[in-house]
Length: 306
Picture 1 (tube, rainbow, N blue to C red):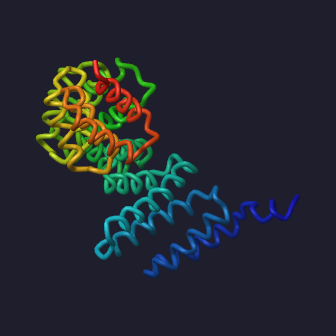
Picture 2: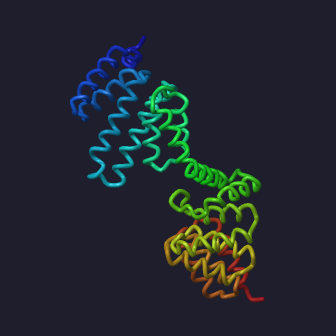
């Protein structure tokens, strides 16, 4: 056996000793020292579930202690680290209801509603029948039902936007969003997502209705404006496409694609000088973009004397 292999062999006794030391620090309120021991135990033997569990629980206590003085990014990083430890805990011991309960609380704080509901369901399965934990978990599952359903619809919509998804899958995902179009805190940009899915599925009328509503809700949603312009172009409504393209361009004037879209709309309307201005800017921003190159070629053809 090589020195490298021996150095990385799990050391269960060392890990258990470190967990015990961490527990002493934890009980006496020295959370930072406790976490140091728990993390060392995780390194000593990654298969020791209690080391991951105690590290995750300690990180949660540290989060509760420090959250008020942390900015949003630091709070998210702290919760992410707690979730990582607790994920490892339940992976090594799937029957650990304490691990699942702690993970459920972290997931709720991170607004991961579907995953939180799943974690609470694991508590229902594994918590002792003679305690209060199972009933608590059942109440949590019921309270999360609507949010979890909305979260799953959002996840399904994002998955259906991938290039390999069929039109039927996109229609199904858009339809699943319908009950949650007004749940902005759970499904951000719900109408924009649904409209984009309908556009990709070829349902332009429904796509336009939703995208127009999306940009009324948020006039700075550049992606919704981009999608709306595409729908209007496909429908032959060049004036509406130009309005949406200009709105998007004004919000992100250095985005070559948005600049090009304005030029293409002018080109379609026969305004060749304006088309040339915007397509030239787009080409300078991104000279290798094939769509911009095609727009330049179309402008050159339109500019030739008949």
